[in-house]
Length: 59
Image 1 (cartoon, rainbow, N blue to C red):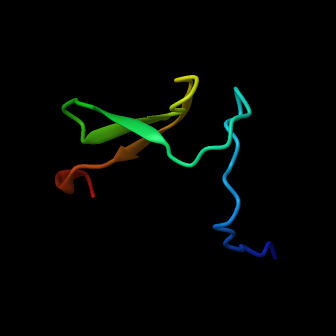
Image 2 (cartoon, helix red, strand yellow):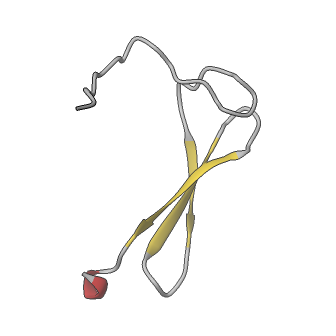
C-alpha cells in the first residue's frame, strides 16, 4: 500500500519552468455542463491541470 505524507515545508516545482510554487493561479471556464477550472503556473503561465465539478443535476 502507498503511504500518503503531508509536507508543508516544501513547495512543489512547476513541471515546465522548475520554479518553486508557493501559489497556483486558476481561472474559471464557463459552460453549460458545470464548472471547470484551469490551473496554471504564476511564473510561466503554462497549464498544470484542469478540473471539473459537476452540476447538481448530474450527480
